[in-house]
Length: 199
Image (cartoon, rainbow, N blue to C red; front, top):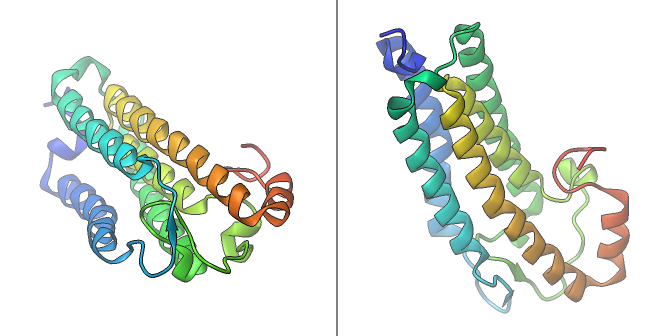
C-alpha cells in the first residue's frame, strides 16, 4: 500500500483528486464544443490544436500508467503536503485559465484564428503574460502531477503538455504578429510568454 500514489490509498484522497481532475476536464470538454472558429475569423492553426490534444492525451496515459508501473518513483517525503499543494495548484490553474478565457472574450478559440478588427488584449492576466490560459493549464497539470505523488507521472504529464503548448505558442505568436503587426510586437517586448518576469 505504501508504494501506491496517495490517491490510490484511501477514498478521501481519491475523491479530492478525481473531483479536482474533473474540475479541469469537464470545462475543457464543453469548451471544445463551444469555442470554435466561426464567422469571418481566419484560421491559422497549422495543426497546433491537434498537437496539443495529442500531447495532452499521451501525457495523461503515461501519467496514470506510470503511477502504478513505477512504484519506485512514489513520493514519500511529506507526501500529504505534496498532495494538498498539488490540489491547490491544480484548482488555481483551472481558475486562472477560465479567467483568462473570459478576459479574451470572443477572440478565444480552440484553434488558432485571427478575427477581423482584432486588437491586442491587455486586461486581466494579459497585462503580465501573453498566454495566461496556457499558464493556467500548465499550473493545473503541475498540480495534478504533485497530487498523484509520483515523480515519473509528474514528469511525463508536465513534459508532454509543455511540449505541445510550446509548439502552439509559436504558431499563435507568428499568426498574431502577421495579423496585428507593431501593436503585438510592442506587446511582446513588454510581456513574457507564460511566467511573469521570467519566461
